[in-house]
Image (cartoon, rainbow, N blue to C red):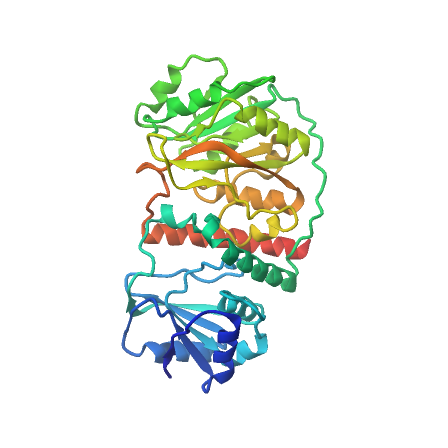
Length: 424
């Protein structure tokens, strides 16, 4: 058997390759990547596919381990590496949609996954050049780049059709946000989890305190046992609106720090995100977000932000406004993409019923998926937030194994959310 390198991934071309296959397995290679086969590479992949009866097979490369496929791995950017083996029988049974310009292989993969296993061989069967060597902090915004809009629309259509076929698609019908029975000390709380951000924390807190609002608000800073000057800086602020919380536990991630804030007696009716190295764009952000939460009323509101460097100079891609979101299909497309945007704001009563997972990556995505299952999410598409990109960002240049762990966790979040939606 030989490797076929498709000229493109249109549905017509992919279907043509499946129809013309003369063996029971179709090996497809990425023409942009140089593959150095290890001994018995295709034999090993063939043996595993035939032994298991799976529909799709992929493997690790030397120095480039992959992650296992889950039912929630429906994102079009899942990293199979540059070589996959496809069961021709499974592909012919699954069929493909028609008219896709870029998504023929993506559509085929989702259709196969509905009936057959997609398996990874956790063995380095080949060497391969890197397809995209950019840092993770650059690659993660490709899906909101306006230049990729037509591509993203097509991927959304394919993913949506898949969710409908498996019974996990949700129509645009939403529950009403329940009236909270709790008494809150203030209308809104700005929540800032922080650890070792002596260079930026004072500016972040001042950005929150400078907000002009016709309601009472406070700023809850959850200081996760900083070992630099962060704690001293916070103690020296002296504004009574600042609540400086230091958790008793020493094992909290960002999500756990959020829980410290939202379940505290100081938390307001609404809680609004501000990361410890970022800034609100002006003094009207808090008023704008609270007005949107009230107007829905919404259980959650997500704004837009502008990418800047440490000196606050705008850098590409500039405005991140997630205009791919739609009321009609946003909560379904959220299962395909890796994030919903920022800054995020919540109805505290609703949020307290869910809570955050105690992790430092994907905690916000987990909560947004869960809220979107029941409630409409309000959107503000103008920039509210300056998001700094600098060497201190936790996701600016992740090592390969860390990026894999994060991707696996988000796929797991999608898996349990899809299962819940199928049961709804």
